Image (tube, rainbow, N blue to C red):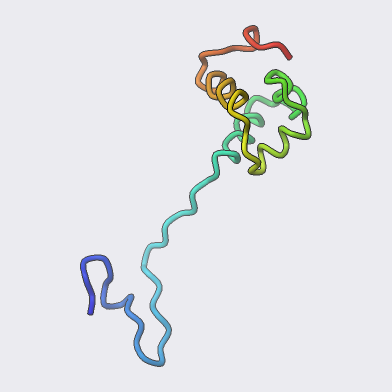
Length: 92
């Protein structure tokens, strides 16, 4: 029996596969992918970009692919991305 969230065409029928909804949601982008895009938009290497936050190139690469970013680095990164810190405020 359909309800407000499921249309008749989405219900499975015996011996028939369930119909796919007409519109599939787009996949959500990971925040880490946005970090990589931000770095690339600045035309900076991983070494230069992550170095300003005291992070090695290797760790920066891992952060860009999903490794959790330590809180102190995340705070600096957020301030930098939002324009509250600039290169002069950070050593690197």
